[in-house]
Length: 383
Image 1 (tube, rainbow, N blue to C red):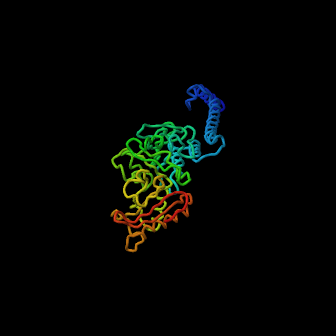
Image 2 (cartoon, rainbow, N blue to C red):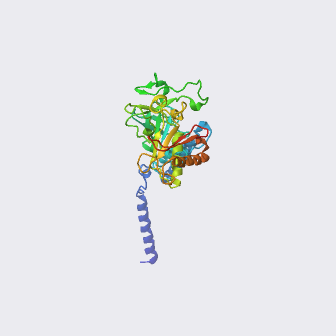
Image 3 (cartoon, rainbow, N blue to C red):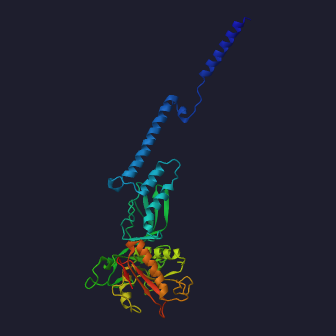
């Protein structure tokens, strides 16, 4: 056989095989092929889809970042956290909620960083920051849950735990409560329910200052809520008057600036090697009727800051004997140990002028040991 004839036959056979192979349908490489979409059409579709998704993500982030603050375009920390999560590959469903919760609550922790509650009138904003678009705050309490998209306090009186939710994802804010006040208008003939409060001094003859206005509302405290933490060291029960022990609920006034100042004083003592674990409140809020007519009233001022919730008498009792410890380590327990707290107050006020107030030292008696009065009246006073 001629060699050229043999080569031609092989080429013809190869050509035939190739044509047969080409007649078989191309195996589907994607779900779009299986639906009959051509490779070229699929390529165009993929490019268009990517563009649409990119524009959607960009538009969502822009709307969240700019539809806040009345259109001023200011990006708040909580908004930034959520916007970043929406545009960051691999972000988990709750990562931005964690960041948002921290950003919202951190300013409410006070200068000490140790506050665990916010006290305010019902329906008022909880924080200066607001919730991002699509997020809601969930408040849970004995009065039942409430949800709000504006991060306003619940409309009802109570003590509430808080969580932030977006869709099915939810993040509780740990170690923090929102406390909404019972309006002062609920007081009738000096009482709310069975709890006797009395009446604040009238404008006539009293100091002309808003700091001496009667409280606009009260914290309602039940047996089950008395251990609610106001800060790292202090609970609601620490601020009770010493009367009406069996009457519930109780109605008290507490200024969180005072609690913040107390925590800063304790932190100052800790920095000087004095443990604060034994911090004790001897006297805090006093109702007007208690201040004027219950127990030994000697030494109680008619305009006492205790009636306005921004004063507390404290001592340090780390050894648990019910009295002030030897804080200055001179081998004696006397007014000198109360002055150790006074020195701490002076340092705290120098660093935090917004917490300036009164401070007085008292020696021990047969009824109690030495103690130190601390308040946040707004002007310096020492005795």
